[in-house]
Image 1: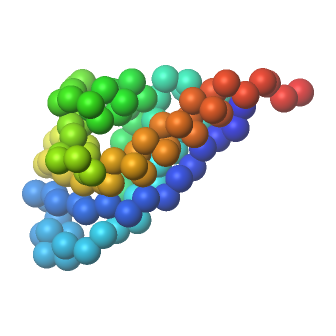
Image 2 (image 1 turned 60 degrees about the vertical axis):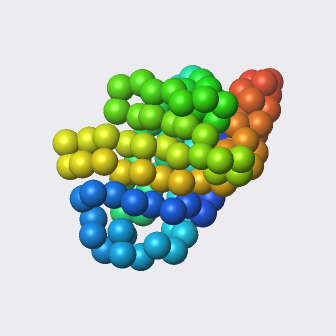
Length: 119
């Protein structure tokens, strides 16, 4: 099974980093899926040392309707965007993606999970 890594552009708004709030431009975000590490989880790497791991099912559900689990919430935002909200002791980060980028990533994760084990 292969690791899926996809880069996406996203708008980030956080109550912990004023500099990011002031820079409303898109930033690179890394979407990762490693079926050998955890076949049910995806990781989102934000700029800096910020990486979140949560259920792949949560991401999929949140693209259709608001969904949340623990410190992560996902919901559709209009017809072409989706929001992923991360809560931590340091504050809240809201990341807005193009829905098509997340759907492409999810399709790639299901393809990777279905690959035969190489040996």
